Image 1 (cartoon, one colour):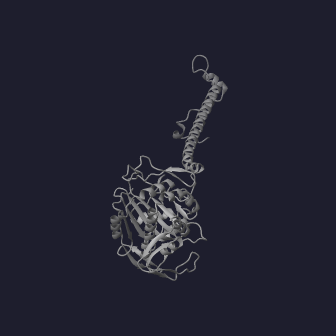
Image 2 (tube, one colour):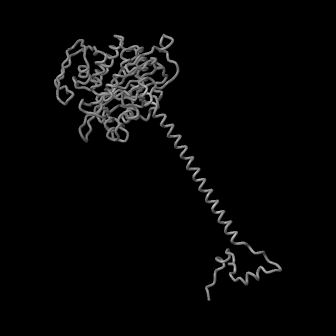
Image 3 (cartoon, helix red, strand yellow):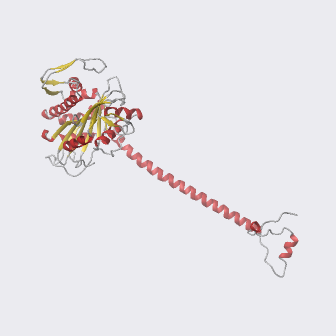
Length: 418
């Protein structure tokens, strides 16, 4: 006897149709009951419904896939158009002078570096800006930068010798230059390389190590990490950078015919390091001197006096001497015309995320800023405190943060975070 089927299990199921033909004939005999069902037709109908449903689902999947490919193709085309813009300019004659933002990304920047704004007071007297013929065959309308927002630039010299390449080096000198068009002032702050700061994703280190750490983490990331480090520790947005090695510095000074400086006291540095890890004693008497590129580099780098603060002051002196030389001899239009060729020559020695047009606009704007509107400072005592790291005995300069912010407010004015 078969086991009983529980009611809970049996109740929802239909009774199995009898498979006895005689019984089936009796059930649907004449005189009453339902007509016979065409089960073959029902099975074909259900099969057709299943096929139609599968075809519908497959069609929707294909349509969705095609729609996704269309969107992806549109996005790729759009990005390609953006990326091809600089290449198209280069093919039309705008030579790629230096490795810029594509190779050295800077997250805080947009497509163009300079903030733009309304009309600025410094406008040219002529109704139309002069047209400058560049040495690469192009012509450009020379107009001053018309931005309304603060623009800040970091200029850093790399401790890289002529037989070395790449960006995985420590920075030898750093100048933070901030332009405030609202007050028509320029502030220049020298940052000592031994400034003890927090480098994002690293422990506290000297500021001059940020470029090196960024490069060993990811080639081309060094300038980004350097800008992020300066911004994080000083609280001022930095829009652009210029990195140059010794060869670029020498070439830039020689391009203007040298600089003129006046020394209040003589310099005597018998242990001045040459460019090939040897020694090249440097001596300069008190008084007026005309220096070529190599002599200007020695003047800016010598440790005579034993203080990075004195070195920073001499580096600012070189910057002012360059400006004075250019403006006094009215060389600016000639020099600007030579910029493309000069940058092409220095493509392995000078790196920036500034566009050529931005460089020319800034230079044309800066020529009209009076010397009295340019203020300078060096981060030294009481803004920093000497300290020796107990773990390795390194001498570093710890910033007194509140005093540093007060100095920056006096030097740069209000920070509009633009």
